[in-house]
Image 1 (tube, rainbow, N blue to C red):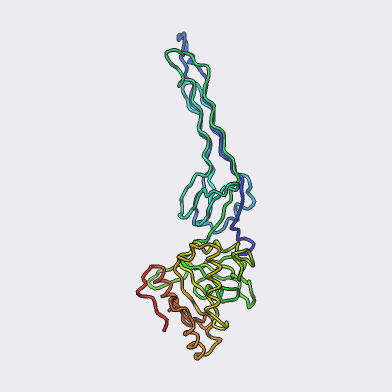
Image 2 (cartoon, rainbow, N blue to C red; image 1 turned 135 degrees about the vertical axis):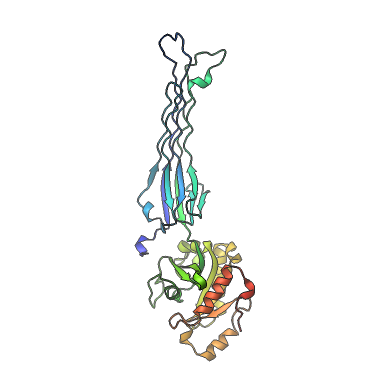
Length: 339
């Protein structure tokens, strides 16, 4: 995905259709002296419906479509004929999209499945025709019910990427390199901070034709939860990942301290992230000696599954995929332990 094409936030104005008015009509036939009321009901106005589409990856197709309007219902007719319904409007979005009311910030919908449909703004109900108001004391009602009015609102659509594994780390920790080696994804890779400016998704093949989805999130810096760096814009993508894979290079001075900083940023952004399963991958082991790796193992968190890898030399990747798969499928007894 090119960076210019990755759109994960749009604000659109939606308007459902108004209901059609009921009809005031009286039966008119030859030789029928006093035909009774036979006005039909108005048709329902069109809904604004959010629909999940697994073929969409971003909200790019909605970037320049600021106003979305549904058709109003048609009025009823004589002979108790109901007016036609207004045509519904479907807004197709990627899986992982949430809709919020722009003014109240109320959560209106959350799309997680392909084909899932949620009515954002219902169309107005059609009004009743005058045939409904006939009674023993009112044989010829000359009035009908108007249709319900349309609904209009500004709605914010936000995409939170759905992935099995989310890569969490500081800029230049080797996340994009790992994704490019494990999957067919081709994120931009460079030896400088913030190479990754947009999230990237890749499908990682596993044993026996199994696979899982990995998301490369732009690097986090200290203070990201307060809006520093690219943090606030992309931290929300981490919320939809089943497993968090923390990546810290073996070349840093204090791996445990960096892990603590990353964990603190996630906790400040959303405390519920602390309940997600997580692993630690110590990357770039090709830049340190075996003796240094042995010394590093003694400093790592004891309550965390840790795997040492080199994406460049493709070392430790099988062990990493095993650990990730077993964590995703929640088989804790098979997880490799740190020696």
